[in-house]
Image 1 (cartoon, rainbow, N blue to C red):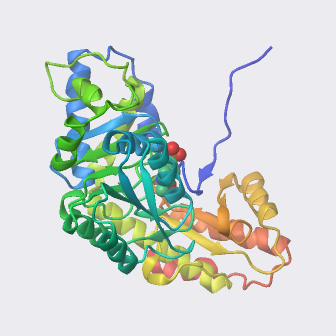
Image 2 (cartoon, helix red, strand yellow; image 1 turned 60 degrees about the vertical axis):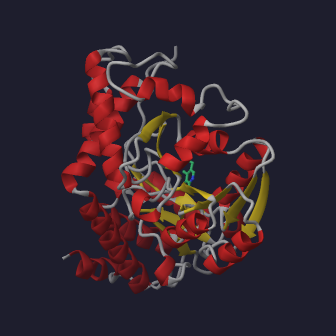
Length: 391
Ligand SMILES: *Cc1c(COP(=O)(O)O)cnc(C)c1O
């Protein structure tokens, strides 16, 4: 007979999900109430305020979409893009390719700007493309490319979009909570994120924030949004205000308890302090890795603290190393994707997984696994090097 499923207890240091704090798991286990219950309604208002805090925005249309980051992505595209629209899409990794797919499926025409995997988006190319395609409806790009560990200059790219009168759509799935996402300062029009990366909640919720300019565009569309489920004109009937909520779809009630708790924890720590912690743990990891003789593949000024792409040393079986970490240390890291497959490991330091204990466990476990592989590394030096940063 099939019995209950009891997962092993892992330390999650891949590209997401990250470790979920017991407070968030506990919140998820609280009693389910109705999605129109006045008490639930009160909590929904708090979630919207907490998300405004996380996104650094006053945008009214700031809500948690029911679904993973991909649903947040799709929500932005299906609501803003109509058949025939031209959309500039920047691609410097895996997720920009998904944006292109979204544009095409909305009946739009993508104008692509390609940069190499491992490099940031070239702002000069963005400006040139905007100049030559000023009739575009939107410009879409990934702020933090989880496939490569690169951060692009969102402030400048959104600023250029604004200058040319084009809506900006920003993927901040991996950045929100880990590095600054400044919706209002950037003048961004649509930003989507995910619950399971630096917010350290379970997967399945996607926070989004939409500017007033973009909200007006959504309200005055020529065609109905082709997705009934993601049509923000309908979804807002449920999320828009206390006392006047109408049923659209049943909210993922317990998951919303969880994102509420994760955001309360972020506010307790302070978002600036959370950014600082991510930066510091990244520096500790880097010191340890470099002392051991390993290196990060991304140029220093573009590195994402929460996602580190580590070059695989000569002669090492990369999947064997990941298997050793998982079986011997219950530690999960990620493999390379696309152009970086087989060349790097992806080591996440996201949210609750961005702590001293994660950095030191990873460095110790990596040393052990690499020695077993016969790699030429320096032993006994990684932890002291990391501790010079942490102390
Ligand atoms: C993880 C991720 C997504 C997709 O999120 P899901 O929750 O897996 O759907 C999109 N963009 C980026 C940059 C990501 O890291």
